[in-house]
Length: 430
Image 1: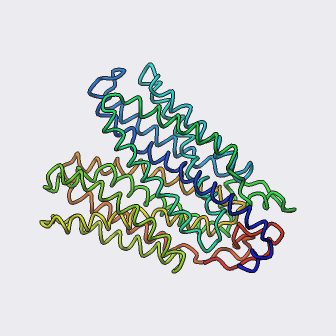
Image 2: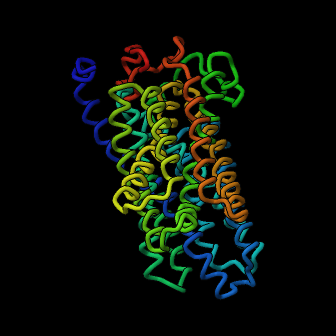
Image 3: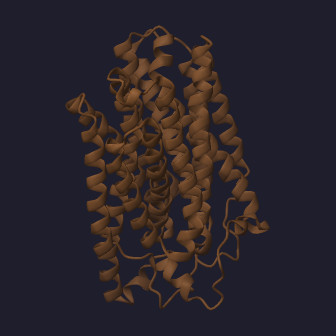
């Protein structure tokens, strides 16, 4: 690979600059989604306390659910469009759609309009992550695609932390949270328009003489079906765990007998572990292989979640187990995305990643609902953690079915950043 790059120094210099902008802008885009993940939960207590628009707890639940439904639809629909129209155009359009409707949320005159605005904003938001991950993967050598995915996703947790800190400052002025998010999104979209390059892998597929129209049905063909089913199940289970834990961990800890401050602190420790796990997971996967690492991560998740079902009398042990739970659970899900970017060729990569993200989003709705039902029934602890451990087992089994290597006919298992003049320098998928 080194010799290929060194044969075209000018291309290397240009590609380096393009990669920097791609990395920065895609990371910030994912940060916006992390910010949005927390923003509604941060303001719901204020909305209910002030009876904003006459909002009830049931209304708030409906709004939160519709937001996630919008994200799921956006994630599924953007893939084929990104593979047909280009990554750059779809990412900019998605950020603009999300930002404009986010700015309008504080101006809603009714609960119904509030919910509709969040639904439409979710459509744009859901499209952002799969396209960002696709672009990041295609601007990195194939041997570094796992790290490309996991490092990009650190922006997700960074955004969540920013929202939490900002929410503590604005208190009842919740509208500021939406204005900041929407305004920053518009600025980001403007910078993307002038600085974000199109994926070279996409350009090469468009120039190929046998270029074909991309449809979701491509993923149902024999070459991809086995991997597709495994990825969909693993993604569903993975996001079920991520959202279920982020939503209910403090309550489950409190039900276990831990004081409220300790229970709330565990959520912070969980997400700090998530960031550490993303960095570590990508590093290990690029060296040891994606499938084996993902299996190990989900296997460790089963063990950690089972441990949380036991009441611990040592604060250190509790913090350690929760931290390790974040390390393995959060990055295991992202390693599934990394597998998609490595397994599928550029011609269907956006579609594959969008479908994985969209189906996974269904899990993000199901997880909090089932856990909430267990809490309501008074059996949140320990049965909530038993449930999560069982879900991690199913994710492990789904990853076990995944093919280890990409199909032999895949046209771009070589680094997508290779110069266009030498597209045939392929290498085996890892």
